[in-house]
Picture 1 (cartoon, one colour):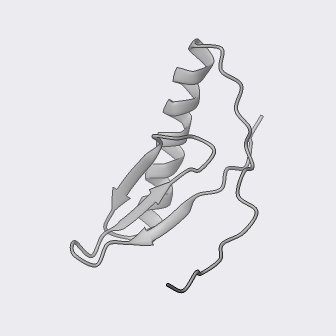
Picture 2 (cartoon, helix red, strand yellow; picture 1 turned 90 degrees about the vertical axis):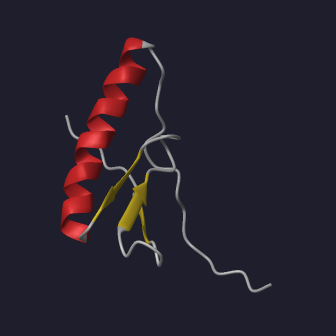
Picture 3 (cartoon, rainbow, N blue to C red; picture 1 turned 180 degrees about the horizontal axis):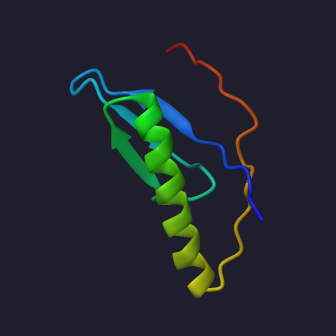
Length: 73
């Protein structure tokens, strides 16, 4: 059974790499040179993270992101 996970994708201005993280899975992240590579890395990172959580019998709420907003300060 597959589950959808929200992945936040950002570009690091210093390294020019893409950074991905999963809000529903704290500590689950990856870097890559392209978005395509990042998404493949994220699939692997999510799978490994879920395996670890399953061993610990932790229940995961798959969808936690409701939107993105910009806040001006």
